[in-house]
Length: 225
Image: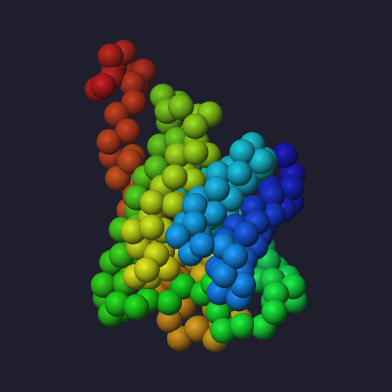
């Protein structure tokens, strides 16, 4: 498959996550027609939907930190990391640009802003991102996992992380998800947190699953499981 097709799929997927997820936040703030407690479900649902829609084309990363973790664990070619990053960041920025035009002006644009001290917020983002990647790499790369359930599993962990950590850090877990709204909400002073912690967390989560993967090998017919 051509590289540009994969990158386009990544851009579209990331666009959808920002458009519907941050769009829901903006609608809740401006109109009150979307209950705030449903926003984590909306993020989880759009992630799951886009996985089923374009996952067979690009692998459905939609997240620069996930792409890096796949590369570090050798499930993704290193030469494709930068093109995927560009597609993901541009997709997110495009979504926020469209929302900026379509929505009435308001205070918020769905930016992730920590309400706890930076050290605690950093650890939250690392842990949440690690759990996200732990689930992703399991259902996406382990043939023993129920592949048909990948979208549901990943969408569910996104929603769970959002419910638990959303009120503390915004539960970004995704640099592309945080950078785009920060450009419009003037919150770039905290963007460093969301451009670092998710990368550390996803790599840690990916390596942790590799540690327990416990697959059968050709030298050991019984394997370790």
